[in-house]
Length: 468
Image (cartoon, rainbow, N blue to C red; front, top):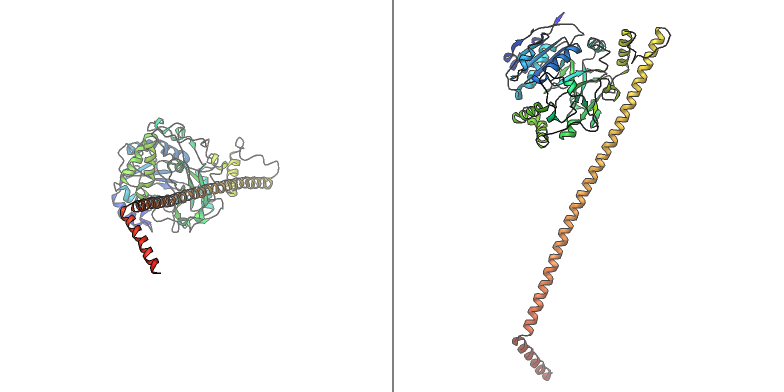
């Protein structure tokens, strides 16, 4: 048996060790937990997350997590008191400023409780799940990752929201997030090759079905484009390490051939507004909380904000996200699923199907063929989604070009109109000057002086004429 307390052996994260470690005090639960290779610990940095405690803890315990370690950063809303009600939870505390040390505090958690084993690093508003978790146990999933020498798993963030406007979605501290926030929307999610992302350049990917996601409902509602792809489930070893400056991504990892989901429960009625206002006030997140500034503008402008639109879907279970192409699975992972379901025997044949009456070889061939057919159908779906994204992108670009040309035409029209107006003014000035000169000439010709000069001119002509 090993123990989850390997922080002193950490080869990196020295800043976290030097700064955070002296500030940490133990509050509740064991400080070291025995574990096996197929067991998982969850770590979470939390500050004022009371409304999430019950749903968070019960979700991860029901999923099969061995233990949950929290590092509280000065909660004042009863978060720590609620966490003390669970035996499989440990609570530490650090009062270091969140804005400056949030990355270091998360590194501290991963280094102390996750080195050399599978560790899930999540926020209090994120509930992790994986494809066919109703068939494959968490220990089977981790064994699958170990057997294939994977050291990281990608998870896609999926924002969940209620059916009613946020102002009407009042909830109590211990309400079930899953029951109240049943809807999601993937209509505005854009996809790209995960290998093209510079922070992930040194990772190895065993599946071409792994993609990076952008956008989603937060871009639709708030105009901010979040990056939705993370590496929350990681086996930290001498090679695999978090990318500098964040724990959302890792580097030098062998990334698994299946993607998981982080159900994101951000839109929690008035709590959401309070958290947004504090983030803006404290400027505690990326680029002085630019993302939260966008949130606050929309919330103040639309107090009865309804997130659920026409393209929203109601979640039945995590497997929906495989069928609609949000999550990716490989042929090998599907074989694991079929094998796990076969072990369960009669009454669990929804995925398995009927292999026929042949021997073990025929059965194995049946499962391989079924897995291959499943992956081919999912690839066809992914190709269709890429084509739709390409078409939509072309339409957006065409519309942008049309708007640019229209703006240029209007600009040129305005410029030429100004030039015409200037020419008109110049012509008008010339006509006026001509009239003035004509009038002046008429006045001169009508004057006595002009008549006298004219008479003198005639006399002079006569005189000169006689001389000639």
